[in-house]
Amino acid sequence: MAAKKTVTKKRSTVRKVNPVANVVTQTAEVFPVVETVSVTPPVTVEEAVVSPAPARSEQVIEHEIYKFPLGLLGVVLFLGWSFDYLFWKQDLGINFSIFMALCIVGGTLWLLSNGVNPSRASLWLLLPFLFFAVVAFLRQEPLTIFLAFTFALLSAGLYASSFAGGRWPLYGLTHYFYKTFLLLGDMLTGLPVYIPKAQKVQKSLVKEKQNFPLWGLLRGVLIALPIVACFAALLAAGDLVFKQKLDDFLDLDDLSENIWRGFLILIYAYLLAGTFIHAALKSKDAGLAGESKPLFKPFVGFTESAVILGSVSILFLAFVTVQFRYFFGGETNIGVEGYTYSQYARRGFNELITVAFFSLVLILGLSGLVRRETEFQKRIYSWLSVAVVALVLVILASAYQRISLGIDWHGFSRLRLYPRIFLIWLGLLLVTVVLLEIIRKERFFAFAALVASVGFAISLTFVNVDAATVKHNVPRTLHGKNLNVAHLASLSSDAVPALAREFYSEAYPQWVHEGIGAALTCYLNFDSYDDSGDDWRSFNWSRWRAHISLQNAEKYLQGYGIDDRKSWDVRVRTPSNVWYPCKYDSRTEQE
Image 1 (cartoon, rainbow, N blue to C red):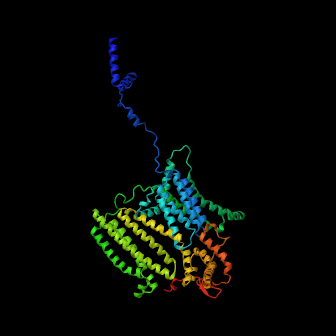
Image 2: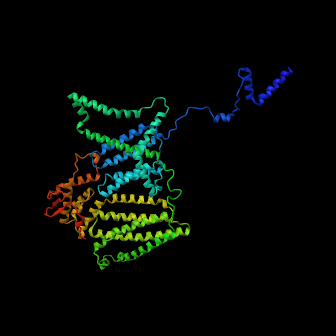
């Protein structure tokens, strides 16, 4: 018994020291057949948790957009069909606004459904987008409508490029170029890159039910089309009744047109798919180029830049000194120098605008290339920039005065109102640029230029250039100025309601009244708006208002005759037997 107790005690001691080895020993005793036992080192609880038994590997999905390709396909095909429906054989009008809105809504909903949320800064881009999308069917003046289309597309492009990141206010000029080319590249290559990845994800996803065979279905349709077409042609050749039914169903008379329209729908859908994929994958702007350090290391010395800006300032100061004589002397001093009133107004205006523009380029260019190592150098450079901008503002004031002289002599026109408004925004941009230079916020130069450009486009919209021309030029006749009827008859439909109001006014003499009536007769002759035939997709507020005004004035224009035998030389005869041309040639304007 003592021996047994001793053995038990020893076994107990071993069990306390190394229980795993004891278990192995006992197992060896129970199963004596096993001659060699491999004992693994003891595994702690922590190791067991960290290193579990191998489990079934799961597919890592690169992005949620690859999981549901049917959603993308449905959205872009609907938008492609919408483009065809809205624009096929239609003039531009409200269809542009509707289609752009559908693209924004459709793309945003698709991105949200795939877990891509817009940043708050990107949502601000919807304000200029909506404004210019509405202007696109409110106006007809050429530059206003062109800028409306341009900035609506630009806003939509920025919205796609910075959808998730929202850092577009920090974009520099290089970023705008880079983002533009990147977006265009993805529009062309986004879908071909997307399809193989989506196929791979669809094959590797583990689901309870089998995935819908989308790509197989598409390949089957492409293969089946020519086969079915061949059999249909043979069957139609064998039975006249079937041929007639097939012709009615397929509308074979317009088959080539339908095929072309279908091809265009696929092209539009393809480009939009690339745009949406770009917004999902490349719009985060996690790190902008040049944000941590400049794209180009400054290599121009401070001394060289000071000499450049100082020389330009001295030249501009000499020019401004001469200009002050004309600011205070007016027409009298102009005559002394041998120039007529109108010659001075027009001479050199384009050159002054060019000087102001390249001065802005000079300041922006030097700002990124000049080394300013000390605080003193930074301060001197900023003050030299201020001096150049101050003198350029005086030059702009001179240019503004010159265009104002032309307006006083000849009245409003597009080529006088455009630069007059542009000069104001260019001056504001120069002031903003120099302020950003002083406070060391050069990164916002491009943003300031973008805001100034948008401001110019918005100003043209609110000024309503053609209507403003009528409202300014017609009342001038009461002060002895001439009425250029051909000019008034060559404006857009924006001018017609204003012309009608002046036509009904009794404040003007007969010759002015008949001149306005002649201009309205020209518009009535070219009015192509049809209440019953015009499609709502081409609706334009300006054209509609002009048509209503002409319809109301038509009964008062019965005494006017029109000679339209030559389409390039349409003329109107007034009740006083005075002939006016409907085409305006600016070269006939007497200086």
